[in-house]
Amino acid sequence: MEKKLSEEEKKALLKIAREALTAAVENKPLPAINLASLPPALSEPGASFVTLTKNGQLRGCIGVLEAYQPLALDVQEHAVSAAMDDYRFPPVSRAELPLIEIEISRLTPPKKLEYDSPQDLLVKMRPGVDGVVLKDGFRRATFLPQVWEKIESPAEFLSHLCLKMGAPPDLWRKKKLEVFTYQVEEFKEEK
Image 1 (tube, rainbow, N blue to C red):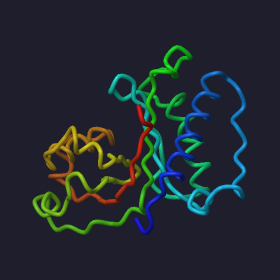
Image 2 (image 1 turned 90 degrees about the horizontal axis):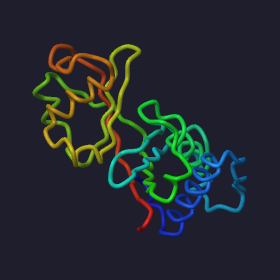
Image 3 (image 1 turned 135 degrees about the vertical axis):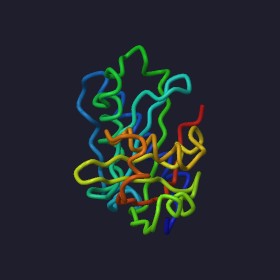
């Protein structure tokens, strides 16, 4: 990441996400964002994932891998999507709002990881550092670097990623897949 966000910029994004989450759950219009009033880092194109947790458990996570809109709008959109559109969970309810914690991950652009064999891929992965994207034709899945906290073994990480992609867990051992890596700057609401 070329330039880290300042504490003020992080707080501004968390506020945008919280306001968007609240508006969506309460079925109200999203607050307007005046991009001209924001610091350049928030009004420039940026890619993000917004992760919602409740009592330490995942409650929703949605984002994009490549920037296509200003970072502030990206965070706003994904806060709403994580709350209302994550197919793994029902929409967040009003009663849950005070229990939801927001984490934002700002992504670097993905870079192709060249490798020669499954063993070479395992060696080139950087646990705890890299987010990983697996691609097989039209199928694609990613895990943020934070997932390494739960799945430390690179082989297990790849197997779970294959399952997430809708493929057999050992596909990465049997077929050369397209692999991309990226890093994140992650921050969350203070308790």
